[in-house]
Image (cartoon, rainbow, N blue to C red; front, side, top):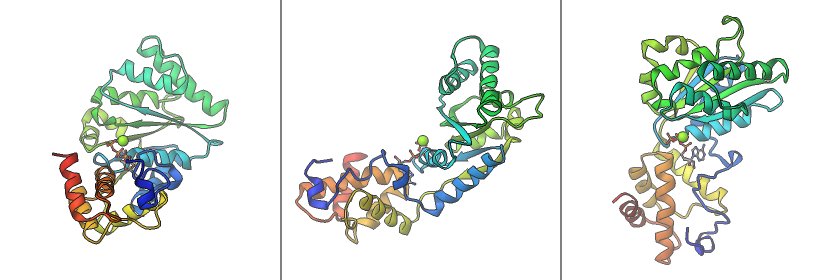
Amino acid sequence: MNSTMPGRFGFHSIPFTREIRVADRFAHEAYERPREYLRRAVDKRMSAALIAPAGTGKTTLLRTLMGSLPESRYRVRYVKVTDLSKRDLCREIATSVGAEPAGNYPTLVRRLQERFTNDLDVDAVRPVLFLDDSHGMRPEVLGILRILTNFDMDSRLVLSFVLAGQPPLAQLLRDQRLVDVTHRLAHCATLRPLSRKETADYIEHRCRIAGAAAAPFDGSALPALYEIGRGNLRATDHLAPQALELAHDNQCDVVDAQHVTEARRLLWP
Ligand SMILES: Nc1ncnc2c1ncn2[C@@H]1O[C@H](COP(=O)(O)OP(=O)(O)OP(=O)(O)O)[C@@H](O)[C@H]1O
Ligand SMILES: [Mg+2]
């Protein structure tokens, strides 16, 4: 963002930044309701999935969910999963729980289970594992959740996991080899792109939390932002500040459709 932009539009901080605080989020029902269902699943000591397209707010929702699970009762760990082997996934999880990420696969599984049992039995907090970006996992690797959540011959609910990922995760969960994992899911949430009106409300909200009295986009800019961004939060977050910068450079006090179109050309030639 151009450093003089705040003066023109009244921002006191960078608008549309991904560094948004949970408290400043756009707390629309489209996010709050899925979050509540995920929280209820975890409350029941079950697991859940969150499946939605890129840039629709999954990771932000996980952050919000983490904030809504009190530290006095839950110990939440976040792991960003890529296409890892079983052992490497266990090593990533071990690192997130503060356990030594060394040893072979059975050793790592045992160490992780000990850590999760310890959370519950000694520290009296429920362990919860968020596995983000899990759509790229191989079925046999995702299958380790079946092993990791099997305590005392499957007679105890100790660990809850929340799998988040893009739509290929839904396909993955239909794999016959993963029925034991899907049976552990109490809820499967999704997120949708925002509607035209909701996108305008989102833009207004993002401008206000950055200090503006109102969103400096005119009646032609808002439809243009929706037509191009299609209610996808990340696309909107890229397009809107680029358009603001162009308006600023042209000494305009409001953004119009031309700025938005030009912003698209600069961002996605
Ligand atoms: N509830 C919200 N309020 C305000 N901004 C949000 C909210 N949810 C998401 N965003 C914004 O949208 C951007 C994209 O969100 P996020 O990274 O959570 O999407 P994602 O679904 O995890 O995408 P990917 O599949 O690529 O990981 C974030 O950088 C954030 O700025
Ligand atoms: Mg994400």
